[in-house]
Length: 243
Image (cartoon, rainbow, N blue to C red; front, top):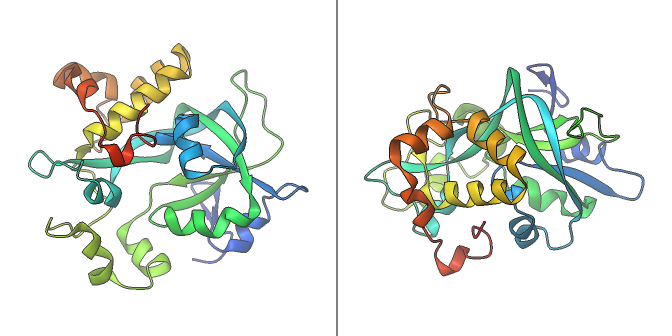
């Protein structure tokens, strides 16, 4: 896939230079948060020097619980018995609108960001204010990818070595549509969305889907009940996943 290749009519960022092309004159680049990064506290645990944290909307995208999160296994919050092991991604979807956060990080933080989020496909998107005014700068969005694309373009160490992080869990695929949200992570996202206000919270409930792309999180919570809200994060994730 060549640099700057367009996918679903959005620009895919492959090389570091693609990211740098989005930077402002003063050397900052905009990042979209849609899951854990809906929380400013959580975002600052990952990007301590971020600036200008604010709320925005993205037209033509939906949130989907479709990526198996290595972090969940490392911290012991993945439940293999129930397959509640999925984290969030975003994918293009006509007619959908999601409320997100946007903030800026220094250009020098890009390589670490790419490495940390490398399972995703990176897109350049134009966020808007809640009343529909486009932001002046494009922002980076982590979107759904595929195992084929990941192992071809991003993962230099190969499948065997990559999946060692999952230990004894028999995980051999990252991008799946047959898994359920990790409970601790879902609780964090719900709390973070709630803290942004009613509009953001309702948007999260109604425009975030299970891997089947049909069941909304509102419908899912009606089915499984509110016990998810009792799932306290472990000490190691308290700052990052505390809502």
